[in-house]
Each structure stands twice: as structure tokens, then as C-alpha cells.
Amino acid sequence: MTNTRKPTRSGGTAEKKFDGFSAEEREAMKEHAQELKTSARRGPRAARADGESDVLAKIADMTDADRVLAERLHAIVATAAPDLSPKLWYGMPAYARNGKVVCFFQSAQKFRTRYATLGFSDQARLDEGTLWPTTYALTELTADTEARLGELIGKAAAA
Image (cartoon, rainbow, N blue to C red; front, side, top):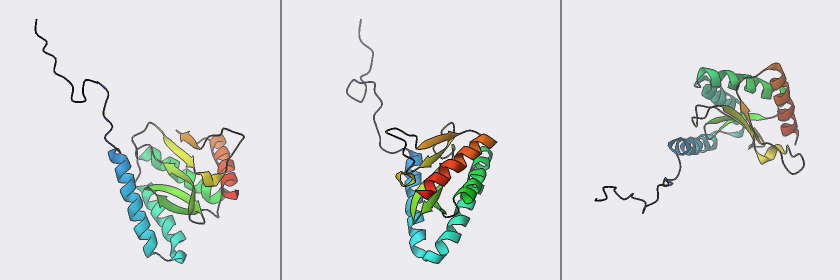
């Protein structure tokens, strides 16, 4: 009896080879490079107004479910942390203090995940002991959820 099995290309192992960044990650990096170029061309006075229009345009391009979440979250940030400046960050709506991102919205569509997320950077300082969440999954925004997000974003902006 002869062996008809062909050897695998990876030297006999069935593990999938890592090929670097995903297409979505590469696209996000390209978007970030473009955002940096655009930001460099703008003056400091125009940054906030242009950032707002960039974020609203990005939100308008989202799928229905993501757009509803992003619009509501944008309103929550405007109310809870009016000092944060809207801007795009790796192609995602983000909110910054002194140019540094404090929180951001990642649509489910962007990286083909099953839910959208609200993430906080280390600038947020939401520290609670030795372990705390920095990203929250969002599937819908209830009144309780919106109130909790307002508290978190307000605390993050005050840090």
C-alpha cells in the first residue's frame, strides 16, 4: 500500500502560517497615515471643526447598526465631555484631549467583528486597583447603558 498523502508546505505541521497584518489592519494603517497628512495641512484653529466634520462623515458611512451606535455615542461624548475634540484615528471616530486620543468607537464592520466597541486609551486613566476594562462591547444603547457610558467618558475626560 502506497502513501498518497502530500506533505504540507509548512514542513509537516498543519498550523496556519502568520502572514502579518490582516487586510483590515493594513487599511486602518493607511487611513491613519492619511489622517496625519491631513492634520499636518490644517492649522490648529481648524482642527476641531474639521475633526468634527470628519467624524460625522465617517459615522454617516457606517452600516445602519453601527451608525446608530456611533451617532448616539458622539452625542454622549459631546454632553459628558465637551472639552474632548473629535478626530479620526485609524479611520475610527475618536475623541482627544490635547491631541491625544482618550476614547474611540470601533464599528463592527471595520474589522468584521460581531459587535462594535468603545475603547479607552491609557490617557483615560480609568484605573481601578490592579485590573480594569479598557474596551466595552456595544450591541445596543439602553438608557442605563448610556448613563454608564456618560459616567465613564466624563471620568476619562477629567483625568
